[in-house]
Amino acid sequence: MKYPNSIKKNYQNPLTYKNRGMDLEDELNLSNEYYLEIDKALIFKKPTPIGISKVTYNNKGKIIEKAYFKEPSTLDYNGLYRGKYIEYEAKVTKNKTSFPLQNIHNHQIEHIKKILIHQGIVFLIIKINEHVYLLKGEDFINYLNNSIRKSIPFDFIKNKGYLIKYGFNPPLDYLKIVDKIYFKEDK
Amino acid sequence: MKYPNSIKKNYQNPLTYKNRGMDLEDELNLSNEYYLEIDKALIFKKPTPIGISKVTYNNKGKIIEKAYFKEPSTLDYNGLYRGKYIEYEAKVTKNKTSFPLQNIHNHQIEHIKKILIHQGIVFLIIKINEHVYLLKGEDFINYLNNSIRKSIPFDFIKNKGYLIKYGFNPPLDYLKIVDKIYFKEDK
Image (tube, rainbow over all chains, first blue to last red; front, side):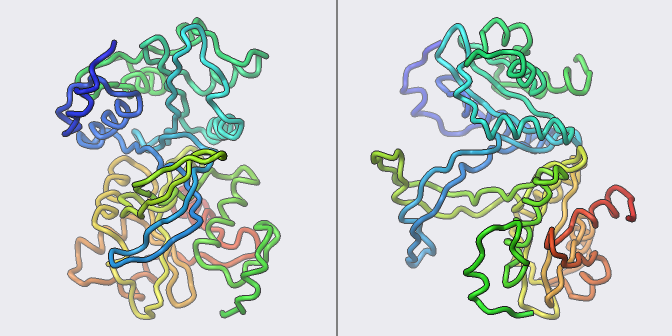
């Protein structure tokens, strides 16, 4: 699916925009805004961790004049759904046959294991071959424990993961999959 | 309790540092590091939300050359404890008789209400008169609904809140209070 850039530029109101030309992050942000709007879940993208090295002041307040991006040690999104803690990372690969593991830092892998120990819900959302899959943290860790490969084959993701279908609003209704696999509901 | 600034400057290793001259944020960060270390909980301070207006590149990667602090719409800390979602805000007031409500933004109040609806654990940690109290989100919202004052009297915090005692490590063992009031344990 390719759409002209002009559509992306016209992006104004997230809740009426028709899910075209967006990247995965936009799609998830809009889905989370929708969930917030209808009081379904409280899930936010964490701010990118930043190290600040220089701050000055002007009449509007503090201004950051030098800063750098830090490597994240947790996952992109976290929040609260049906009383449960939920955290996930979203990744896109242009690779068609596998998902390269260099996309996930070692600290993040350790963090996924800890969330599982503390009984949270944790997963990856992977966009590969123009399809979006939810891969449970448990299945991801199992794969790492049983493989020496530096990538996850597409077939593994297709078989173990759950396809998240595109819709109008929310663009990616991933909580439908969460209901099914974590709350054992099949609506 | 007042300690010379020189002690603060000597701060090196968080886990051996003796809890002196620290501010509330340091005390909570060290407590959360301790909880992480002993595998008790996964609770992190969220990065301050920042709007980036200018980025350049050098040989080390991206450098932020202009950015500003955004107003937070959620609370400072969130995470996972005993399978439950937990979120809280930490505030210090120098005021001795009351906690000024301007310390908490309207967006944050709305967010606290939503966490309660979605069955998360939410509270404020307030340092007032050199003591630290945990005030449950429920009690905070009740106070707002039943008062037109622009501050919470110290007596209300003392009566409705729970005193968090200072210790060596963790400096502020607030999860002991969480166990008691949310998990009905009295150890």
